Length: 102
Image 1 (tube, rainbow, N blue to C red):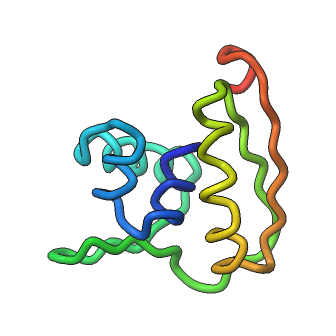
Image 2: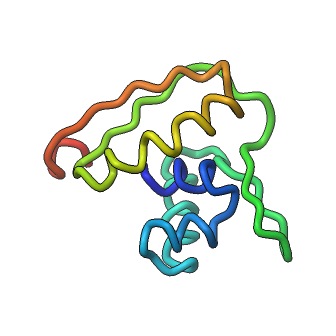
C-alpha cells in the first residue's frame, strides 16, 4: 500500500506519483481500484487542487503489507505524517515476498 501512504506523506497524488516513479494517472487508477475493492473512499479529491485527504475522522487499525526494500524505505517518511494526521489509527507493518503479501 505504498500509494496511499505516499499520498498522505506528500499531500498530493501528483507528488506521490513522482516520488514513487509512477505516472499520476496510473497512481490515481490504482487508488480508485483499491477504494472499489475495499468499498470505501480512502481519499477526498478536489478538482483543480493537488490535495488528497482522508474523509472524516479515522479510527482503528491498518496493516501495511510491504513486498520490497523500496517500500520499506518509504515507510519512515510516510508514517510520521500519517500518524500526526490520524493519531487514532494504529499501523502494523508486515513484510514478505510478493505472492504472500498480495
